[in-house]
Length: 166
Image 1 (cartoon, rainbow, N blue to C red):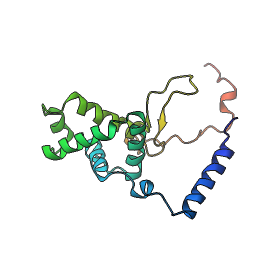
Image 2 (image 1 turned 90 degrees about the vertical axis):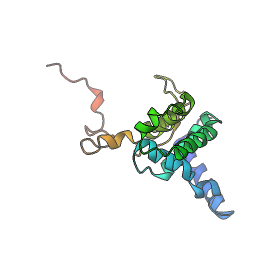
Image 3 (image 1 turned 30 degrees about the vertical axis):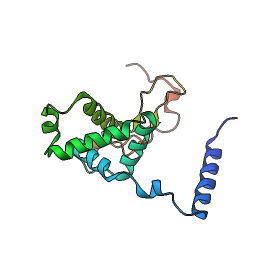
Image 4 (image 1 turned 135 degrees about the vertical axis):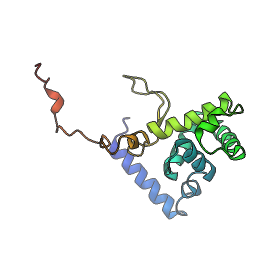
């Protein structure tokens, strides 16, 4: 059976309504991201990161690797105990092990790219978990110059005809 957008919307509406009718918003959603993870994400990125974005990234990373929460807690503990002022000082520290580096890279990759996993071209199912599109930090780098690509500015059907070669 094909799962259409209409069925998805209907199912989520029913689940949301049932959730509100039987006790409101679940605590996991209400609490948002762990404050340590938000602080870690802000430190690593050098930006004020939306806690909801960090929560989605953390959830996706935990789904991909059940040991991520423990690794992120170890990295957060290392950063807070080290008293680092910036990521350059963190990177220069000999205690910043490859395991801690990998955790930092995974979190930053999820925040900047807006997904967790490795996309495979021309594959219908590649196991990539979506985190965010418009909030992906990569778009903030060029935001003064380019808009977030949310739709084609050339209009509907622009790809139907090849451009003339000049």
